[in-house]
Image 1 (tube, one colour):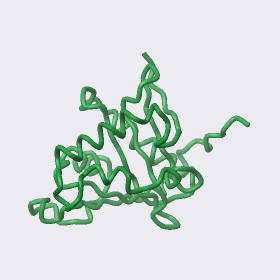
Image 2: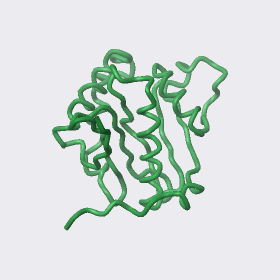
Image 3: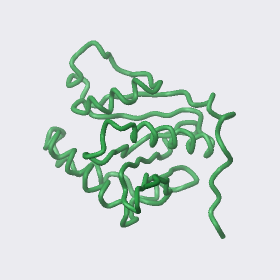
Length: 173
């Protein structure tokens, strides 16, 4: 079965498995650690923030089903902020998050960004490893217990990707 990317919105019914799984993951890993239900993070940003021209919401589909995905929104004029990077729990450790990450970086370049910023939680070592292994710089002290920081920020200069990125995806009229 062939995998394919779909640029859509968090409101797309095909995105619901991603949103539900992320909410469950936040709940089981963090509970009320930050003083509110962990699922509140999923409702924090309106869908329009993840829409062009400043954002993007991506699903990796297999047979019409979301198996991975992610998004970005505008952080500042030159910086996209990654959010919602996710892989189906039964399909992890197969490189799908890395594929999504590379496509989100390319799309950020196509939309005019030259830098990526993101945060992940201290109870998501897989995510921290993904970013560190893909050229992101930790903006925190990696030698101490990550719980001290709570939120773990990363950044990456993607300006060098400009020459290697295809033309923007065009929507049919």
